[in-house]
Length: 287
Length: 138
Image (cartoon, rainbow over all chains, first blue to last red; front, side, top):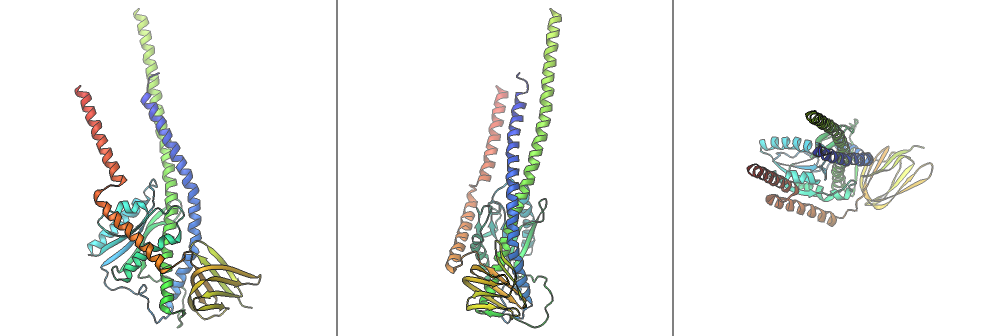
């Protein structure tokens, strides 16, 4: 029967799309588990290193590292933007970029210029036409990024800080709250914001080996890298869970559409049959 | 006998966590032996072996460099997963910069997938419109 051929093709194509989205949902679900494990595995390092930094803030060191003291006038800030390499993960990247753009406009209103460093393909394709100065780019990290991959990118920004080109450095990423919620977060890296630590008011200091500058430098650089790495793995966990959810709702929506179209198709089919019968009947009565 | 809490962590995992009698670590200026009530110390590490001596025996962990922080009752060892060399880091930084320059240079001619797809969609819509109008006229 020739009735509703277009509708049938449409139903078939929606069903195909549904198969793809439900496959993507399942893939994302299994990847999400792994990404979450990776995120949890890297937590001890960043937690421990933050604790040490907290101790350090209370140690009465004679040497004050440039990362720990406030830079006077802020004229230029650096932002490391962590995004995903792939799309189809709901509003994850867009939400982050939108909240970032707002912040960037705030900065620009105050006459502060912004340098950015992008991690992930989505960030570079979004920001390359934004007119902001892009200092470094990192992409194609895959689902299991290695700590080494970050070193170059972070170094570019820290070098800029050391050279006095920027007076503040932050990292922007999606913080993983739970599978349903991802929070766009901008965190300041340098100058460091002293964290909460247990009370240690007696006067003490570390013994530094080989010397204060070198030991502190090694520690602080690792600290910053650890924070960026933590942001990166959290962002990947967010990406997978966000993709899982958006693909689930896409699959559900496709199901609804198929249902609606089938209803329309059946109505059209019935109408065609009714019409045919009435034609036959009226034809027979005319004879 | 008093013990000291030892954590050995790397960026990707926690390698050891527990109480120990003493710890040995390859400090950059010489081997460090750390017992409970050690004075606060912050040192960089050379590649080498970290030995944790516990009641049950000796745990041996290889580190490729890193940092050790000593508080009187806690020792935290941050192991590097990356092999660090100044030149290597430098070349990676250069690579990252280069990619940025390429991206900036490419932003003018707009040859990326997104814009091309948008342009294609627009052209397709125009073509459809034209063919529709032609169909009506004929």
